[in-house]
Every structure is written in C-alpha cells, then in structure tokens.
Amino acid sequence: MAAKALSFDVGDYVVYPKHGVGRVIELQKEQIAGMELELYVLRFEKERMTLRVPTNKAEGVGMRKLSSNKTLEEAVETLKGKPKVKRTMWSRRAQEYEAKINSGDLVSIAEVTRDLFRADDQPEQSYSERQIFEAASSRLARELAAMEETDEPSALKKILRILNEAAPKHAKVEG
Image 1 (cartoon, rainbow, N blue to C red):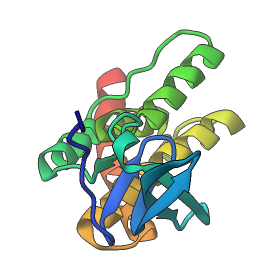
Image 2 (cartoon, one colour):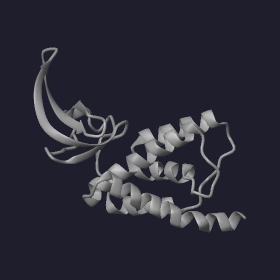
Image 3 (tube, rainbow, N blue to C red):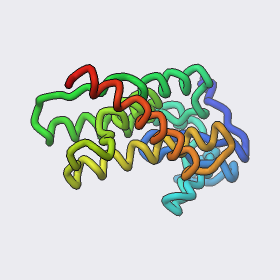
Image 4 (tube, rainbow, N blue to C red):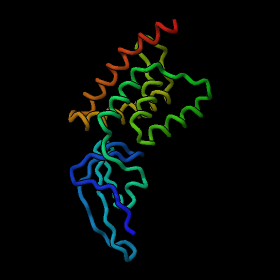
C-alpha cells in the first residue's frame, strides 16, 4: 500500500514549487495525532525559512530534485527566444506569471523572466512588473546556482548576460 515516495537525502538540493530551491537538512520522525510521520526538513536560506514536508506528501506537493541538464539547456534556449507580449490586462497576465513561477517548472520560470526582461534602452517597467521579473529571475538563478555549484549573484549575472545578448536580435526584427 505504501506508495513509492521520492527519496531525498540529507544535503540534497530540492525544488519546492512555492518556495524555490531549498536543501534537505534533516530527516525526522515525529508523532502527530497518534501517527508516526517521517518528515523532510528543508531549509530555504534566502527566505530564512525551515519547512517540514511529510515524506509521503513530497511528490504530491511537487517537490523535486534539481532540474536535469537537458531542462537547464531548454530554459537557457527559452531565455534566448523572442519575448511573447500578450495584450491581455495586466492583472490577468500577472496571475499567469505568478502561477508559472509557483509551478516550480524551470522552463516556465525562464519564460516569465524572458517576457518581463527590459534591456537598458527599453521603456521602464511598472513596479509590479519589476517585482514579478525579480521573483522569476531570482528563482531561476537559485536553481542555476545550485546546479552549477556557484552563488545566486553569479547565476543572475549569467542570466542577464544571456537576456542582454538576445534582446538586440529581437528588437531589430520588430523595428
């Protein structure tokens, strides 16, 4: 009857969709309501947050290992692509962007980062656009940093470099 739960070891980096990259710092057994539960204890340094996830619920909440190199390459290609500008109301687009960020899917997060990126010579973003761009690019940078064993600022520089290199190509097509 026991479903095969995803197995993570202490020290593993994991992605929790709503919070991004965390690290398994401990496996705990606790008595809760008369039942013994096994828990992953996750630490999210950036948010200074600790989260306990029952091992049998990890898959259900979308917790996963870091993306594969193939997925990372796909995300980088997505960053290089042409931004998709939707003409729907900002509130609707903002909800869609938030949903993509919270999905934990690296390629979806890369789409949001690409679509909301503004090169220095482009019009300024609204405050809420900038907030969502920063949330997406930070989430992307943390997973990239964990995968490439570097830090978030270095990973973010790499992402911005890719976006800045791609931006002029797309501007020429339109103008």
